[in-house]
Image (tube, rainbow, N blue to C red; front, top):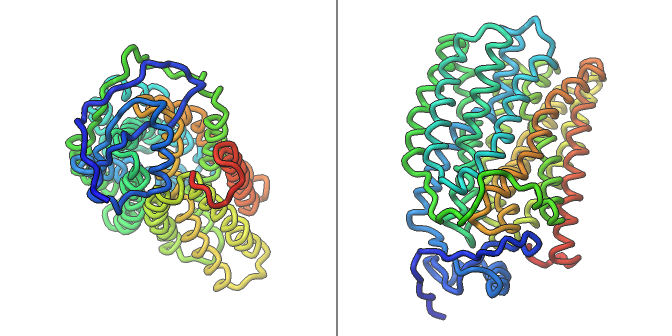
Length: 469
């Protein structure tokens, strides 16, 4: 079979605004990959079969698109690297600058950060659809660098809330949203793989920055440790500004306002529910794993700070591998598998570890083994929350409207990120400082998320286990 020829890159779009007929963006019957053998055939045929009803949009599936992936990788390394390090920040400030505040009070700083990181997408996504990513990434870079440079002089609660919670949260959103959305302009058949590669940037940052901060805190102090992180961000965000680009022109007559009418599409509504509960549970281990290790009496202080790096090391593979496999086996299929892994690791590994720690019955080696295994497996499984969510949402809309769909989804999801960490703090206090309550909550969140995504799959493809979706 010969390699199909390519068409021009100027896309044509449908003028239909009928929300009830939403379908995935279309690849023309020409493929821009390097060889026939690289096609994920079953998924390709599924998209091809629906292309007769949609517009003729071509996707490079590579070329300059890989520079966009590199720029997105650098942007996520900075933005999500900060997000994946919140456990280190929370553990440090709660025992130093804010030691006179309760764990629950301190957690609100980081929940506001997480909330704004996703909620701001309600305007950022539609603006991206209309204007592109350049201004968004530039402003986000300024805010994120300002956040890391000002953190060193923060001493009061409101300082941290304003600097980390507000500046850091908005800056993260301004970089994260266009970094994810831009990839969908360049890839369709390889979108899961490309998004997964870019998303590993956040996990790599979650390995590098906690280990770096752990070593810098005792040597140069809080002020210079956070400044050094900011200096690194300057180089990373320069790459993000140079290479994050959109390709498709804005949709004619498009508004920059979110459109909640798209929730009439039941699969999209269920997908949003699934993402909501996954994110509701995700930030609890990220925020409390280090604190648990410090208070359990099993781990040294040094290793307690390294635990979040182990978690993110598992997430490096978890963000890329499911995305790569999803282009062949189905995006929702892989998401379901990863959700099962998160639920099982929470209930079967971390929960027993917390119970044994509280009762004093388990040996240190048993608790250590359970916790480390949990960190690796949950890190791997939860990595799909970042890499697979965008492509799962992308299957439900036209590419030009992707930013609107993604941001509308995360407007709802952001409420979970706002409340998840404080709820975990309240559960910690209600359980008299024992962690089993918040771990149980985490596991239940992932079970509900699994049910929601499974429902989407059944609605779209039926009960057949071998069907790709």
